[in-house]
Image (cartoon, rainbow, N blue to C red; front, top):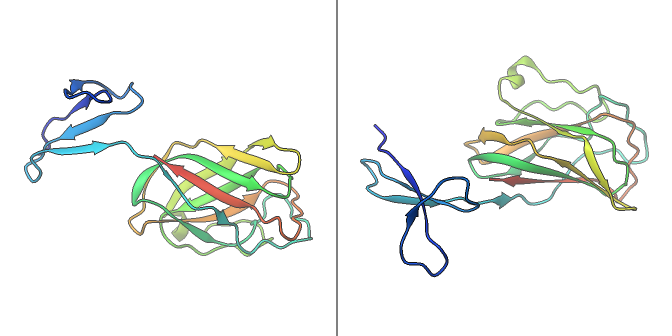
Length: 183
């Protein structure tokens, strides 16, 4: 049986805590359970390493709906909320993508084949992140998504594969990367 919890805050250099709520930008939560008499947790943000999308064929056009490279995984905390996903477009194409996310390993679709997920793999689907907004930096672009997608990945990995929604033609040396921000 869970015991009640309250949110408290303490100003920088302050000695006393006061009751607060999640409307403040940083809060500390005090929780009590029978096993842990007093537990204090703080909110944290984790940014993943840049992951290069593997297996992308260079110099040949993709078609909309095709797998864009191969399967990969991103190391993450065992649970959290994916608050931001950044698609680093070094080839300056700005073509929307969908990133299929899974909590367990899955059977990938071959690069440049029609993207498909089996019924068995769909059961482990975490969701889909659509990268549809791009910011143009003249020679490169940054794709952005804010999915607010909660997950529980006990292996500490989120398995991924990208699907393109256009006719990419990636130059050698311009393979995109993906970064996730976990709250």
